[in-house]
Length: 380
Image 1 (cartoon, helix red, strand yellow):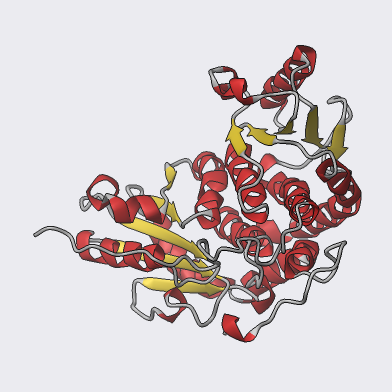
Image 2: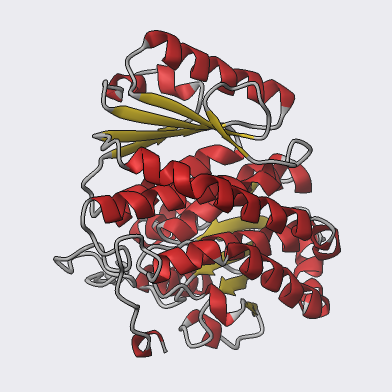
């Protein structure tokens, strides 16, 4: 169980923190996750394939916090890939207003992401779907074999149990985020197909870890007062996750924001000050990339931001962190190396501010597995 683990104390470089270990282990955990999927693909396909044969099937990608942002990253890509709507709906939204999100008339596949698989909203969202939907199936993707969701044994449930190493001990989700995202991407785009891509993805993650660690430390030392992450398409969800990582690991000391490259001009751009860092995740899609490069050029020409950093695969974005060898990647595969610089930056900012990365919230008001949620009964 989680409570039996005691995270090592941080030293000045963060070398001993679970947070750092779990960021650095992602090449290995991504490969281990795909290997597990290959070993169990017959059972997964037997559950998923008949559901996907239903053309009116509603697919919902569900989770809370970082787990919800997995859905936000993948929903646009899977919608295009599967040729049918795939929706990202946070469990916190479902629990708060089930009448708005659960459609009893439509057969539904609810994909539940959960590092612990025991958050109150995750459990309640599944219970609500079972109670309110005439036809619902649950694909649970979880890192914790002892979690409540992993214990579900009903005939309408299939649990994908990820390798134990993905069950992050630290407060902030890092390798659990990337592993659950890879699992869903693999399942819905073809486990065999992903098996041909995962080695290159793992290599790209390893390469950006080596490249980004020093850059992240240097940026953290500049003591930015605000940080903005921008991304288009699948990267808007990633920008939201990147912003949350910094907020979590600094215990809210550095305010963050996220947006799309085009949306940022419509008001949110006013957040930029001379002590603001703006990070842009640059798409490999030729058209989308042009809009990403436009906002980078505009922000630099404005001269208002302290720094504008591109996370990219090519050499046409000026000051940047480049993911070598990934110029041919589809954007969905870039999600995995692109999140690493944001994770490392959050870690180094946490250390710079004197926080303990594995337990950044010293007051105890924010917890690794959410607490204090009261589940209210539905009105009759």
